[in-house]
Image (cartoon, rainbow, N blue to C red):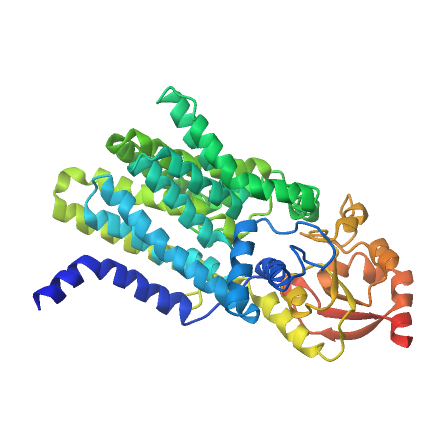
Length: 503
């Protein structure tokens, strides 16, 4: 009995984390976002000998996560290439477990109470945004675990070389983490008064093989998808800024929950104030902890300045530290009131924070992933309905190439946005077309010049272009219109080239 009690005392937290991940992610299964399937197709082609390609024979870098792609391809080859979506869920779940345990160790080894370390870790574990993104199949869970591993060895272990290596892998998982090694280098230069030459060499050793391969193989180290997406969306100059500020205030990057403006303002100020108090508190424990404060600030500022369309998988690298420092801030304010009161109020705040986050997302069972998967489910239905129609070797044009592209692995996909189809960039409209709303319209000339066998699209993407083009409608017939209001569309259209049909 004593051995069991000792084991439970030592491993109870790991058991809670593992059980929670199984219940919240493994059992419900993956609910991958459309973008995740782009990486899945790269991994599939790589594992089947077709090279690092989306369309075999076309060397275009359309994924922003080479490390995750290589990991999926390797495990797909070992286990089953048909199970790549499931493998991504397993990878993400393991990474999430590592992240929660690393966050616990960071807070506790900064000499904060164990209950506070547990509270901050559980706040991330049960965060609905984290759950939805992990089930959504993106690389974000791996990115966060590498960020926290880098922070742990730098801030706690003070092992600068290992931190450089881990931050190199984080960069290969997603390039926006370049903030991390730059902060490490800045700290060493400003505080340690030394140039981090060894760390720089180690970072280059980790990242150079991919960069050299990418330069020679693709002709560029910059993913083509970055170029394409910069032209794809109709955004206001402060789109990313308003999205981030909205998240600061409401805990939701998706929508304003209807709070009055003055409530949003007060909430924003309180969150920023608590974040500042928490930052001061951890810096008092260790001056290395400056990195923990600066990373979410610079990460969010970088995205605000770049102003991309902020999908939800951009947020976990920010929220894991932002939320944690807010919780530490609450604890710091209560530090003089006695440990029992401080513990109770701090953990109560964690519970209230989670209630707010689940409430504003309004998805108490499925989490955020179901909120964004309406059109992915539609695409799965479309793929099933066209299974007998579209033959191997067909050419299909579409504006969203995730689910449908992965469903037709034997077909060549023309990406009308240009993520994996380089020639599409020159056709993109440089100004909004009549009827064009938040996003891109499929360029008519692109379709007329490349003449794909099929065009598959939600109505919203063809409303200002193909549906008003006599030349297109002369060459293509409507095979079917599937009812859908996804993204404000009036159906999903399936077109077939009439000449190709006669052949």
